[in-house]
Image (cartoon, rainbow, N blue to C red):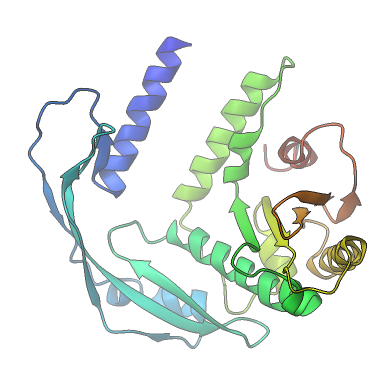
Length: 282
């Protein structure tokens, strides 16, 4: 177990260095900061891919970004990073205007998963959560978070398959990060996008103190919204929905697994979703 932890720690350090210039230094010795300059012109290099992903899009002028080198007292070291980023504006299949940021300090293809996350979160929040709840929500505390593949790391088990689960989820998360696949964000329907990869949505809904709704009425709206989400977004839609009162106390919970609504699960939510894809993806 100690050997596995060491290997995992080294692997994570390598990933941090490659993508952020940040890594863990277990001792307090000084370390000179390296400087990394990313100058690749992504809009030119990936012009064909961008047209396939975003359709008729617009892109901002190049923005020069800088992350200063520093040492953190917690033991992490950040190298100096110079890179470019661009803001892309496009429309989804429903005609909604979407925005995302492209950075040349990260590999191009994995960035699509972040853009997909953001588009799905924005669509569900604006077209469902806001439509159903309106001013009855505290918007600062209410959110929709999408996790593609990465939710697998939450899966744990005490049964004989625990090692299988760990290895499978690790391999899957790495595989989608390495895929050089085009995700057609502007043209694919939302049920198609959601069916592209196993993913889960975590939806948090907090009552507005000014709302005139009772807790029962507030929760009933969630039931209606959940049923609509499941019907609209297809049989691969997975979501955990919980409600809080205006004092941040949990008052209601249910989930959707592969389009079906549950108010009780034998396993936790992530494990139930994971099990539902056994034989399909892992």
